[in-house]
Image (tube, rainbow, N blue to C red):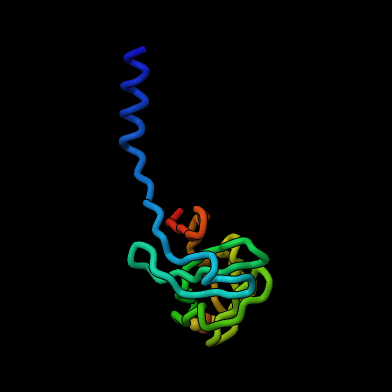
Length: 119
Ligand code: FES
């Protein structure tokens, strides 16, 4: 029993997970709204789609346009500079010219607090 416990502890110590950061309150991001927040020093766009929150990188992978200044259309955000579209659920490019996906972030709601961490 003691050996198993030590093995579990040893394996847990090697798994490094990012901490959640409180980035906003739910009342600040109503449905249909997106906003730039900072998570671990990275710019992230946080969006509310019909009451569900999603977060992906805010800097467009094409030429670094600010996605939070773009257009939110259902589960997609469109870059204001050249129109690349990214899926908020996966970070995947839905329409170019961007060729690379955005990083995705995990979102958790704790009461009125919106918490985000890198996946
Ligand atoms: S910078 Fe976003 S599409 Fe060009």
